[in-house]
Image 1 (spheres, rainbow, N blue to C red):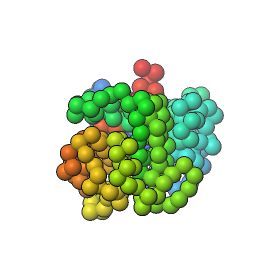
Image 2: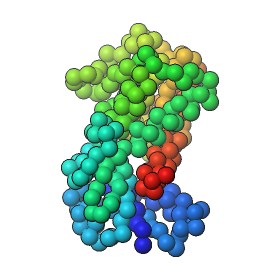
Image 3: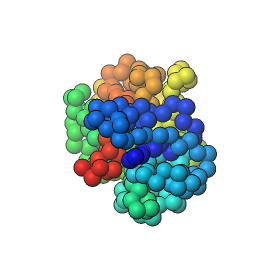
Image 4: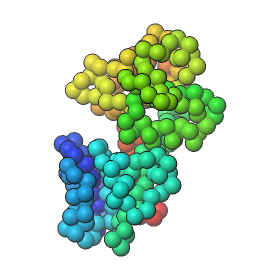
Amino acid sequence: MPTFALLGYPLSHSFSKGYFTEKFAELGLSGSHQYVNFELADVNQLKQKLEEYPDLLGCNVTIPHKRNVMTLMDELDPVAERIGAVNTIVVRNGRLKGYNTDFTGFREDLLEQMTAQGYERDLAGRQALILGTGGASLAVREALRSLGVRVTYVSRRRGEGRVVYDELTADSLRACHLIVNTTPLGMSPQVDTAPPLPYDHLTPRHFCYDLVYNPAETKFLRTARGAGAGAANGLGMLYKQAEASWRIWTGE
């Protein structure tokens, strides 16, 4: 039976399995296709799963394996290679090829949300702040760069190519009208947390995007909207990256 899977650890809240199980039902594939969870603490255990599921055609990859799974790939899509993270795998004749559909999902949803809220889609030459430097930030950075946006990382710790939150000023926010939160701050159940920004300097010219989608409105987004800024959560990105995975697996 053609099989697809989600690789990650832990998988207590699996969006992918429910999404694709429902998709198979809509396409009339429930009796012929299946989606399973590979809850693996060690990414190298994927080799055993390939033996257990000889009909495995593809995997989604979530935390904490988006980076370390790259060592198992026989081939990398150029975008995934530039990003340095894989969240979609194609299995063909025992060979694994890694892709990154977070890039596609974020880019498509950002432009769609900005257009719907009356913001200019042409972002070339603009500046953006990316909050956080984890795996999710890598795809966001590559997507913004592909749109001609100059990006600055913001982190709790100093490092090359980044600033710390305490260094952000009114001038920093005036120069960067796009702010993307890639940290888990504000995610349920810690709904009272938010990145420590100088929110008083947000204006209606700003657009704030939060990869967190549970709750639908984080404290980060609520504060941004209170200042008149545009805002969107990551639910659209989640759906769009899943659909991009399906297109890759089916060759559509």
